[in-house]
Length: 276
Image 1 (cartoon, rainbow, N blue to C red):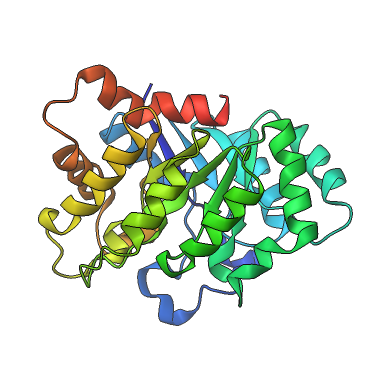
Image 2: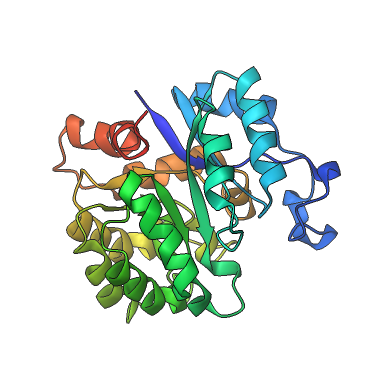
């Protein structure tokens, strides 16, 4: 089963995508299942994990409604307000839906990444670690030191690092990203998404060679069983078409890998991580 473990849908008129403005270029329009389905068929994808794009409970409810009508959506990663004393109640409400598979913590959007280390936040994440709930972690590479601390404080967290932690691919910067990712990968319950890479490279002139040291490093650290393919569509359209994202990863995976190892990255690991 081939699964795209990271993509988004949005409808601008809903009004909670504050990061989307007319300056967002190709992204400033509605993106719904009808737009993606032909691309999924072309790349023989059997389903997708839709990930939140707004920090509201209303958007999570909207994605779950979309999933009711669209069978290609096999999982929804929503959002929870971990500052809300009733975060457990909101989780119970969402988790009653069969396609709700977890939630995402948007460290990237925090004014100070250390917000995620506040005692009430780590207490909430410890609660979800106890339930073995899948949690996506979104951050920039300059916030990785905080993520290292978070995983030390909540060592049982079932987490996946989105977009290989957004290293500075356009600049060719490797450290301290490499060292910090090694610390993160030492936690056996943490996975990593091979997603969102083209938008961290030069949008207009990236080449496959730009990604080699980054992909080789996470392959070395996480192995074939803890890596997930994600297109990050439609955000990827800033730098590449859906087919180009798939072709790029095909080119970057080791030629020595077996069909089983490639199948793991392209779907089986997503089934395992999200408990599909």
